[in-house]
Length: 193
Image (cartoon, rainbow, N blue to C red; front, side):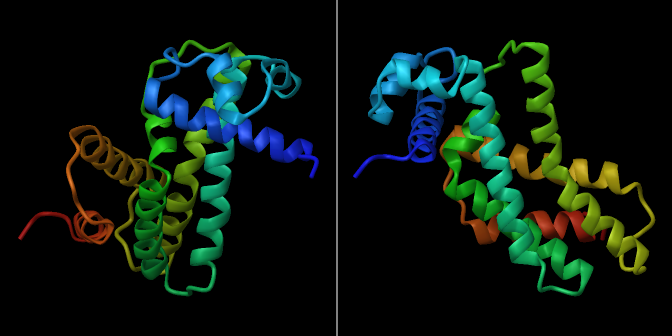
């Protein structure tokens, strides 16, 4: 069966995600990506102009997948606090399943061309949009204090990302349920007695 163009492109992205997570962006070359994807180096360049372009595509597709699945997961819910709780739980489970993507997002400091850097930042910042919308909805419904939804969402995503960074890089074992419960409790209830 002839592999479709989209399948070949997806194979390249999947191979790159695994290699970037394992060896870092700078420790991975296009030859390795091609070999892991089962394609020629020339085929890689039929789909991507550079290794940087592959990296951005890995991030864009990962964040797009998160966005699509998150919307499906929380859309049936009515209560904004329940949406927020389930959104936190979903995001944590997604990061666990897609640990290589998380390692790519938090890995090497990479110097990108301006156009690629803008695409990178747009996708990274898009991760806070769901949380910002859910927080704004909960504030509007009088279920959360009146705070800046942008700042609150940025802090929430930062809490989750920081916890994951430590857990992943320290090799700690902690269930998704425990992480979700603790983050939700800290975020919604705070630490004051």
